[in-house]
Image (cartoon, rainbow, N blue to C red; front, side, top):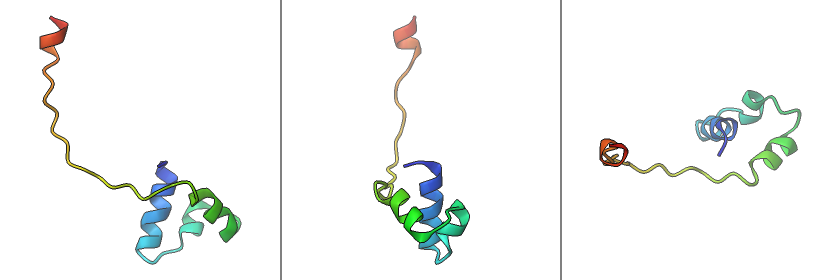
Length: 56
């Protein structure tokens, strides 16, 4: 997901006009842009790689 499509999604989720923030000329353009962008589901990750162990 690009930053723009993420911003559009968040604006729309908040009840705002995602098309306006994206600067798209039409609702169709916004829908086409979003068609292949799924909602991001974030997960918590804890880095546990000690780089010094592999770089010497």
